[in-house]
Amino acid sequence: MNNVVPIHPSKEAHPAIRQERGQREVFCGLTGIIWLHRKIQDAFFLVIGSRTCAHLIQSAAGVMIFAEPRFGTAIIDDRDLSGLADANEELDRVVAQLLRRRKDIKTLFLVGSCPSEVIKLDLSRAAQRLSKQYNPGVKVLNYSGSGIETTFTQGEDACLASLVDDIASHKDTPALPLPEGKSLVVVGTLADVVEDQMQRIFKDMGIADVQFFPGRHSNAMPSINANTVFLLAQPFLADTAKKIEALGAKRIPAPFPLGVEGTSAWFEAAAEELQVPRAVYEKAIFAPQQRAQIAIAKHRKQLENKKIFFFPDSQLEIPLARFLSRELGMTLCEVGSPYVHRQHLAKELELLAKDTVIVEGQNVEDQIDRCDQMKPDLVVCGLGLANPLEAKGYTTKWSIELVFTPIQGFDQAGDLAELFSRPLTRKEKIAA
Ligand code: SF4
Image (cartoon, rainbow, N blue to C red; front, side, top):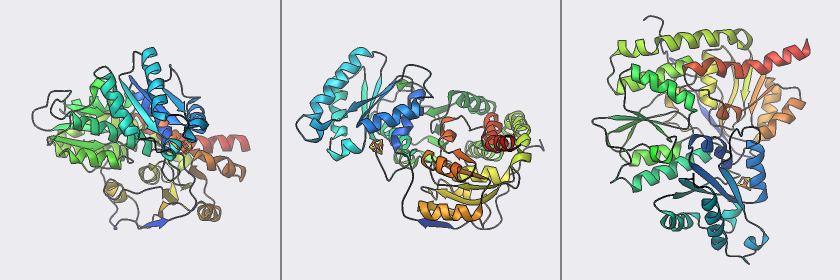
């Protein structure tokens, strides 16, 4: 099995992380509803917010909806804001109407927003009250998607953290029987197709007891206890991981499953933790790893030695920078990330060259100036910055697309590389 890609951490120490504060250009956590509602197929996300919040969700989801949406907005209007109406009464009425009409809903998330926080609407009490009322048919949970100071992927973190609280509250009566010995949970929303591929590889490694969190249905959430070990599939789940650890579970340190190298190391970490023999691990990943290497090789010619600049947005920036620099030969101008979780990203940071410029936080004006000086071939940024930067002549990639698209695992490695090579190829064709 000498074709398995060896992981060679950089011999140097970690790159330094510079912090920056100032004007930020990020989306709020409501955006996470778009992929979360697809994943948990009997959940409904009710945003308690303004017309702005409703527009944000509708425009973000507009091109993505392929089935009846399971999200909506209870609009807070002038009467609520001025205190003339009892917002709790209004909320109870909207929830009753919704649950009467939609018998398929098994979990209802009340999602807080900036306006609901401004009028100090206590959604956690509302969720407890409504949960009692609709128990046992419907579970009502709450989390906050608000925030001018948050990033859009924090919505998923807050949502999953509320689910962990719910799992903790039912600790004595787990939804699934407790497994013998250690059980593995993969944490972070993944497309079903990615989950199925990963499940097959784990099975080939002899790890049959793998659960994914969140589950596809409300009654398919994993049991978590001191026998649980977990692998993060997404780098933006700080609060969720903390709550899972508080239940006694242990995180397996690993890079994230992006690209051939990251995915190999991610499975390898699970194999080591669960004492899978090396030869069994290598055999299980051999064929998918070969396919992935062939798929990404096609894009190397386009991406090699091209300069890329990351504006902070999704918190995926560091694993992506690692993939693009090490497997596709791109030159990293600057890797901006809204937050850098030092422990969760430790295995990623080990793989980056020491001189990589990593900036945590944002001062958008300064960052645009640096981008102008470095003249990257490709800029990864949020939607708000993409158009102005395109107007300046830059080729951009929306970071939000990297969360909507299945990119994890071996079979998606080629698609992930193509997400970066395609805008450059398109630009060349237009210029020709
Ligand atoms: S930033 Fe606040 S007001 Fe704007 S869409 Fe998000 S939650 Fe609503």
